[in-house]
Image (cartoon, rainbow, N blue to C red; front, side, top):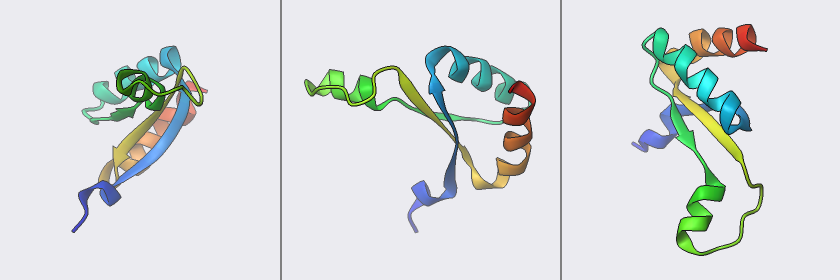
Length: 74
């Protein structure tokens, strides 16, 4: 079974917004996975497609609660 399929993207935004969201999720004991393609590309020596954008993923079991948190921060 592929465990990456158990995580669902709930937000894409700049680093400041992602940090605020991650902190709000952690207050509810939800562990978020942050994906930053531009940083990965920079470290690998490639060009950046969308610099500064990060994606937030949560486990599917915590999706409903995480989506409510995202909505409350808007």
